[in-house]
Length: 323
Ligand SMILES: Cc1ncc(C[n+]2csc(CCOP(=O)(O)OP(=O)(O)O)c2C)c(N)n1
Ligand SMILES: [Mg+2]
Image 1 (cartoon, rainbow, N blue to C red):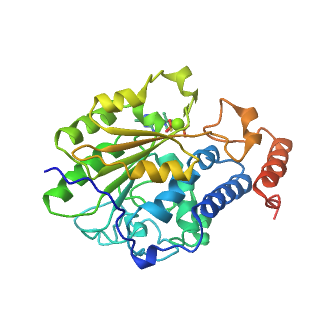
Image 2 (cartoon, rainbow, N blue to C red):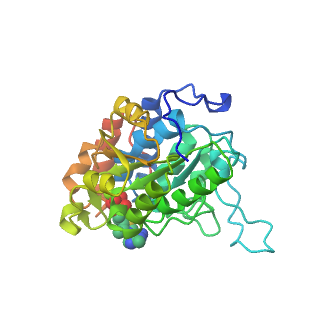
């Protein structure tokens, strides 16, 4: 089945309407991840630099989703799924109920979890206190997100599985006549995984045009700059060759993001390649290049200097982490 090109944006449900601008939410995400990183003596800070606009835009503008169903402060980890575990739940409820007309979000790179939680807090879907449970034993607010973590609905620590899981979900939803789309947030490290390419190929073959992805192309990998670890070459040409419609944008430019999402892509998945800076709005981090994957401080002086410099860049007071 090939859907007619969509020319207008689906109507938002009232609970989703957000009084704050997407720019304000992106700044809030960076401030929150910064504060957490300083307070906890390290963290996935660079991912807030690169992805803040993408996640703010998804939740504040693009996703058509309902009100969250779980409590604002997450319940403890309810155990693994089984026929007898009535407490088992995924974190998908923070993205609203899984109703046929609502969109679903698959959050693929699990190490971006802190940025995901900060986003949920900024858009009012999660209580700020939830971060108090971050990386604690027995908590669902995992450092490396899992399917029970807020905003996530499937295991995603294994990079590269998000897009194909989403393709299958979109295919199944279409067979059931559901009108909601499936969006995926991905990292560029995931293009090193063969499964990503199989997903695009299969989605294009089956005409799954309800599948949309935005990829944080920060040109970074955990061991450093992407081209020093694995030269992935021209990923736009590759995504197109495997059957996707591709938009390449400045990932900090919301106008380009909005325009990219409006591109008509009948019968094909849409992949938005959001080219980003791994130290956007926190230029002090540039001195760490190419080791930006996880920010850790070499000593107290490094922590204090980073605190002062980035707080000034983000327009906040330095974090009082001694208390
Ligand atoms: C299949 C798989 N291989 C390797 C890893 C280990 N790993 C964790 S994060 C990461 C970096 C991948 O690059 P990207 O997601 O783009 O990271 P970033 O830009 O945040 O540095 C890797 C290789 C993993 N989680 N899954
Ligand atoms: Mg990357």
